[in-house]
Image 1 (spheres, helix red, strand yellow):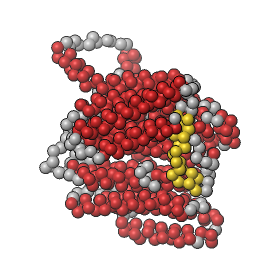
Image 2 (cartoon, helix red, strand yellow):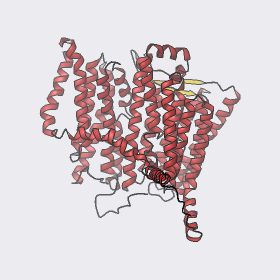
Image 3 (spheres, helix red, strand yellow):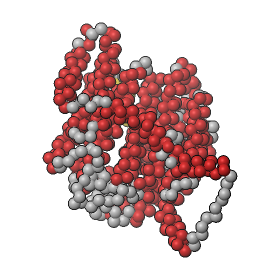
Image 4 (spheres, one colour):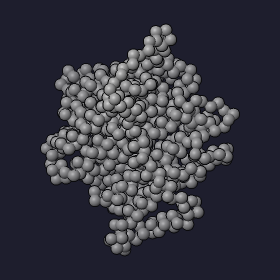
Length: 622
């Protein structure tokens, strides 16, 4: 049985790698590989679940392999299978198979045909890693793949303004979920002093013992898990991103934002339920968020003029109810609800083009004016108020921007004095001084030695903020992000007994990606005079291979799973103590802002309407 569990993860990986090798003009081969790999995966999944059901529904935990290990730290891939995984596996494999068949014809002769199926298989790989994850590290691996594939599919029509703009907006919300999961991993290391598995979370005695001794850590970790789930499943106050994610092709909207990806937040709550079920405060908060989301999303769904937006808000509303069911301990009901909602929303989206065509025809031939309903003065005012608030999506987009991203931009704009000259005169000597102090740290007073890591991390955060708002010098913005990683590495090395091999692991991927990305920008700068980030450049139209290379460099700098920096990020947080709140805050903010700044660089330079007027310019939206 263990072999089949590993096989269910390897089949999507093999299909994805094989699809990369097929020429983009060979549509039959591209769709055939996708259809074949997803179809085989569905048959193996159905057979495996059938055997599992008749053999007693045993829970499996498979420690596959250790990626990195030191004294007191181990980063390993762990696969886990129980009834939650079984339901998500069957629903995901069947829906992906049906949508792959649908996409073979729907995407015919589309310019990005190969790119669509590559990204779809990449998403399916991330989905399977996520649902089979046996610990937070493996979960985060699949989580990151889902986030990047979401960004690429929303911005599939990359020559248009709104798909790219909305992809950036969705990615910014995903980064909030990322930091929730990263900090959860950090707290779990300090709570259990090891890489905790979900099998261990089901040990009620062990969980109760640890929570009794560290109640506030348990509460904080539970709230961080909830933050990740809320951001991923578009719950209040992040409900606004799901309709904007519908800018991608209809098949990707059906599989991502109505059925599978949007339910991953509920999956995390189900998987970690034994950890927070005995914390009444957390359960009340989950119920409150689910209830508010269900009510507000139901109102918003009724006033949308777009079919996709209607389906999106309807799905969000049902997921809010699923959250309530999970908090009430109704696991079986939540799984049934998930399956029903996923199939219904996928069906609604796939038939939506036909429904819209039918309704347009009905308007021409059978239109009847709606009877006017007169209400009393107060009731009419309330109805109008609800209508306008629902139409404006309750102002959640503006609310999140005002309280989350506007302060970050204001802080970055206050750093206008930082330029290349200042960086050379101030920050380079400071970093050199920090390295010298690191060598002679035993001779430094204890109070100063405890303060310096916070100072170094704050300096890195300043550079990250400056990069986030930098608009004109693209290469300087890239170098600021690179320097941020160096400052973070210096802060953590100074903070704890840190093996230099650990730091080499973290920086190796960052340095390689930083050099490659810098040379891509330099190469592009010699060919294009205008590299202003105040608008989209759309250079992927002419430079497809450099665009791909730069995207991989951005992912490497952001600590994506393809690079050693992914392991390094988790390693860095494990060396931050529970009482070092400022250090934790500065490092966490740096990683969030770095990811946003990197994706913004890629999107502004290589995506959107082309800056040159001699190239065709697409409409704003799909």
